[in-house]
Image (cartoon, rainbow, N blue to C red; front, side, top):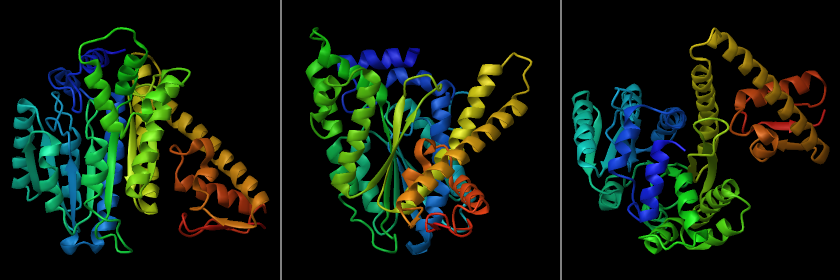
Length: 404
């Protein structure tokens, strides 16, 4: 357990973070970026630009709205960009074709000052950015009003429990009906479901001690999850790891059902052998969102593995780049082999099928690691081997794979 986890856990158990992020103790988080944060930011960067480019084509003036509900200071103390700085850089990169209006919310006064300075700097570059002080619930109606008629992407990244289930489903999503064929009112949410909070708060259920704020903390978890269903899931799990997975996936399914949305849940770790620090969940009402997210996840995990390898070989005589490239080459070969096997299994069951219809079955255990280029490579190899009539050309999601 690292220092932040310990402090966060103590605050969660005392009820100080009920419904909101840790405040004073999170200052240490913004000193430098950890591997889990790197993965999150890589995904965010890899997703936002293609999302804005795609949905903005139908929006008036090419305008898309971005909301960061728990923005922090915008940059780490060592100068490394945080999510607000990264998004503003993305907004600048696509400014010639799209307008990304950014709203950043932060409740802590010192962090808000830094965030405000960042948005002032962004405005001087011709970007649309506004920093809002206080809790995200206070400003949600305002931002949603500004987003009327435009696509919206919300990034909900608290240290604690964050938005309530009701605010997420009824206010954020509920005010925006599922978009039609144009995507003009597309609404997507990328959310940090805090796994540490699940473990800490779940421990209250089995602890015989009546800690201060225990009932308030449990009630806050009920509000975040949309009911007390998570309690039975925690109790009947064999260990914390199983409990976290069950509850994170159960939460995603319940939100998806409530707002008529698809979801993709990704456990995020600081090291491959660590328990998840959080689960990153995308809620999207269009299949293209899931495909874009899958591509962003795959690229981000490549950079995450690079960072992990660099950390583990620091101070040694290993050539990081050569070792990394060799390991990635091996992974690519293994991914393609598994995808080929999965496609062959599907062809035994079906004369033909589209990739989009059986995406998860095609990817199998490499879902979230491999991406479209690996599907294409697998199909082309199968075609050369005479195992499919599909030559691997064309748009991957719409590709129809047939028997020879």
